[in-house]
Length: 156
Ligand SMILES: CC(C)(COP(=O)(O)OP(=O)(O)OC[C@H]1O[C@@H](n2cnc3c(N)ncnc32)[C@H](O)[C@@H]1OP(=O)(O)O)[C@@H](O)C(=O)NCCC(=O)NCCS
Image (tube, rainbow, N blue to C red):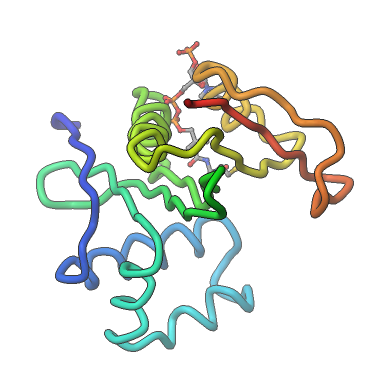
């Protein structure tokens, strides 16, 4: 596979964003999942709105996005990361870590104190990525379910 780069997506990228986001949902949840069914009906205006609302970063090979992560300013103190996904063919090359590192860099530029995310306890691949960047498990955050934990990285 050719060299990859990380790009912050803008509204003009909405078609590429929609394509990779829907691939992520079908790969992770399946085409029968309600979230996939909901987002597959999005109009151009809805995809553009999502790109305006939160920072979306893509791993791009050639002109093709092969991975995504989203970052949302949660408060004056924190940024929340979500929807990390890599095309199965692009996994195992360090791109997951590069995507998360880019989103963390963006969070730093927002001058927040910490970056948080949620992960399924059994998701070893994702845990390895977050651990390697210094994220640690936070005890008993509100919103955690039995299967999910919150991880935090102090950035400023
Ligand atoms: C999680 C995910 C993004 C990782 O992407 P990736 O590009 O394969 O990860 P990287 O190549 O950057 O790997 C980073 C580290 O994780 C480790 N790792 C990757 N996959 C792993 C696995 N299946 N089991 C254990 N460790 C794993 C790597 O060995 C590497 O550590 P190292 O540098 O010490 O060798 C990818 O597996 C994915 O898209 N999974 C499905 C969606 C998902 O689970 N998203 C996270 C939701 S919280």
